[in-house]
Amino acid sequence: MKKLLTIVSMLLLTSLTFAQKADQMVGVTAKQLGHGGAIIASPVDMPSMLYNPAAIGALDFDQIGIDISLGIVNPPREITSAIGTPIEGVTESNSNYYLGMGNGFAVKLSDKLILGTAVGGVSGMGVDFPSTTLPNNPGTPFPENVSVVSKKGLLKITPTIAYKVMPNLTIAASIQIGQQSLALKSPAFTLPQTESYGLGASFGLIYKALPNVQVGFSYTSEMDISEYTFNGTSLLPNPSNMPNAIGEGEYTMDMDSPQNIAFGVAFRPMPKLQIEADVKWYNFSAVMDEIILTTPVGSSIPLHFGWEDQTVYSLGLDFQANECMTIMAGYCYGATPITEENVANNIGAIAVVEHHISIGASRAWTENLSSTISYTHGLFNELESSVAAAPVKIGAEQNIVFFQFSYKL
Image 1 (cartoon, one colour):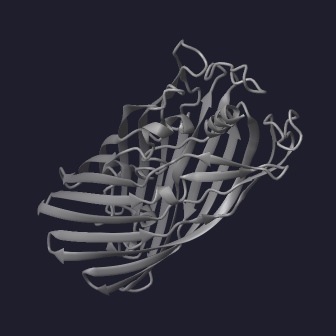
Image 2 (cartoon, one colour):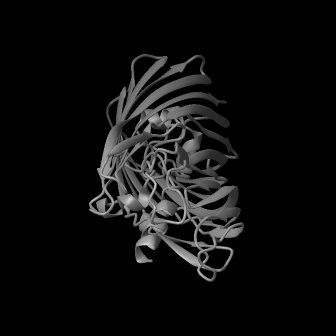
């Protein structure tokens, strides 16, 4: 029975998957991605308020600023599995293209008071592994060799108010409104897509310490997302009526978004060149250590992901080649929050990419209108389980192309 519950737990966990730095996007616009996500001290556009609400007080515009950005995310993922068989096999996900976006708007009510709002897909994604993902195990009451499909996404809206205390100091706060969707399909159960909503808050500041040095800080609270309710079905045994399955009914699960702290320093060694370095900390251990799935018969199944907290380091370069053209480059590193002993509990997860390299370019068409394109590559990384009973590897890489239009008045 203990072995069965272990296998069941692993199969449940195969259905959840994430993207970018753990489940956080490096950025949600072409400019943010082009700088490797290093935007806390020297924001690059209106949607930067998603990461530091003080951004709208530090950007250069007279009355109104608008940014619209769309992109394509291509994250090839694979599972190498030998569960239940001595033959090792590699399965690739069939779902390899997703849309991303980040949009923002701000207006100056006075020289000191600025209002704005931004919306962006800050985390999520999914997998679509075919039926060859796992070999069948005759010791379980259901077939394992079926498809594993999932979809997760968190969309944030951040109404923001910023105030310039002094010409060189801006403080700001945002309400964090979230819509998180989730759909899961595994050998053990099928939970159709549903949405939950959450609230949080953020605070930030940007201070120009010297003519060529600017620092930024932001804190974002844990987002309390309402409990998911799925009208799903499961082949798991009913504890009160074995060997009959739990079957149709209402399944519930609670999954919040982590709090984070960010700090950045921007330095301009010469008029045309700026360098920024950021550090971000995500409290994943508070929300992704263990999640409880409650079944229609009242039983509770612990899903032990075992995620650790993550520290992300970003470096961004910005060089003004001429009056119309700006070249940008970035690098971002964050060690995966998944440990080797928990690989089998995160089968199908794409939270293993650790290094991202970015390039981009912006072109000013008029005094008020510009466009940007960027490309980001997440280097392939593979993580192997240290548990001898479950030899599993999960691997992924990423390609991200974003376009952006910026207008200020």
